[in-house]
Image (cartoon, rainbow, N blue to C red):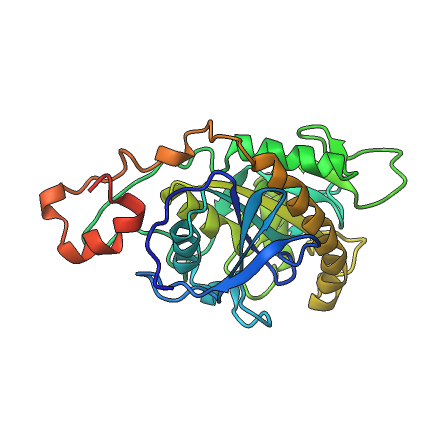
Length: 312
């Protein structure tokens, strides 16, 4: 498949995550789609299927076998490919470290703010003859976040109060949902130094990861609703009473978290069926393009046709 915008599908959910998230019992019409984009190849084929009358479009951001570093991912191609297949809503599922005592391994955080420290990756569709600026003050879709939160609570997660950092008397560690939180996006692939971890805590951040801020920026430019579901795998190295983070420790908790995330994806899909987008995400770029239309090169027009054809 060479791509081309197939029209928006409000019943579709795009999922950016690790391999295995699309393997849901009861999913029908499962197939792989190879999509070409003006920004190069995505991380791999996109897996599509239907469940509960809604459509899932999944892409493994690190590629099959987890072979791409966070800095090597072609984020633009991944997001553009989702848009080409008609996706209007995106759920980003990623592992994070906790920067707060009350956000524990096994918890989920529906991130609502980002601090972007990346510097080696393309994080905009604009450039090369077209200047554009989208609003990013509130980087996630509140409507989609509410749907995902309701699904997580129905799946048995304890709903931590907004801003709460510690729940006392909860016997089971790692089954809380935190609505809201700030995600520091670092370049990686190394984990933080202790000095960096302490600095991020002083900034008021709650979690740290390596992918979600870039995806959030591109989804906003592509006029897609975006939510980041952060799976807490460890305390970042600031915690004096916990071992410093290692890849092996992260993987152990991540495997349990993936099973939980799959159930949240399963529960979210049917709730999107027949639910119109009532947010501003779908016209986020309406007034973004600053370049005079007659000054936009033909090549740029073609590159941005799927995203902004109606504005050009």
